[in-house]
Length: 279
Image 1 (cartoon, rainbow, N blue to C red):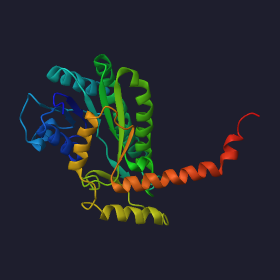
Image 2: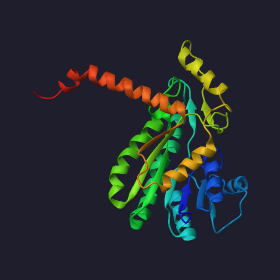
Image 3: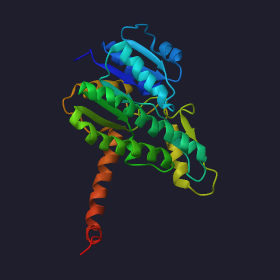
Image 4: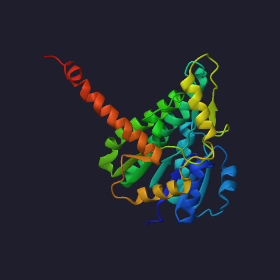
C-alpha cells in the first residue's frame, strides 16, 4: 500500500468523512481535510501532526476559497493524489413544500461544490499525469424514494457529472469513481444533518410513510462507515477502479432491480423509440 499518497477530503468534520480521515491517518497517509471550522475538525480528529494532517477551513460555496485550500495542500504536501468529494447533506419533503432557496442551497453544496473542487484540482492532477477522484453520490440518485426528489436530483447530477468527467480526463491518467451508498450508520438522518420539511398537504401518503420509515431507521442503518473507509483506500490502490460503486446490500438490491425493470421497459418500447428517426 502506497501511504505516501496525499488525500484531499471535503466534509470531514463528521460522518463518513471523519471516519475516513481517521482511517487514512491511522494507515500513514497524508491528509488535507476541509470543514467550515478547521479548529472543530482538528478536535474531532484528535491528531496534531502537521507533517501528515492539514485541517482546512473552507467555504465550499466560494471557488476562491476552494482554490486557496488546494494551494495550501500543495504547499504542505507537494501533490494531491486522491480527492474525495464527501461534503453534502440530505433533504426530504414534497417539492411543493420545500422552499425555493432551500432547493438552491442543496444544489450549491451537493452539486456545484463537487464540480468546483474537481475544476480546481484538475490542473494539479493533469500536471502530475495521475490522480483519482471519488465523488460521493447515493443510490437515491439512481433509485429514488418518495419524498426525496430534490436530494435524488442532486445525486443524479453528481453521477452524471462523474461519468462524463471520467471520459474527459482519462487521457491524463486521472480516474474517477462515483460511490453510491445506501444507508450507513452516520449522522445523515439526524435533524442536524437532514433538511426536513414535514408534509402538511393532505395526501402524499407515500411521502409521509417513507419519511417516517427513514427517520425511524436512524442509528440502525446496516452500512458500516469503517468498512466504507477501508473500501475507499482499496479503490485508491486499484489500477482499474469502477466507474460506479454501489455500497451496501440495499444499494445493490435497489440498483439491480431498477436495471432489470429499465431493460424490460426499454425493450417493450423499442419500436416506438427506434421509430422516432427519419425514415
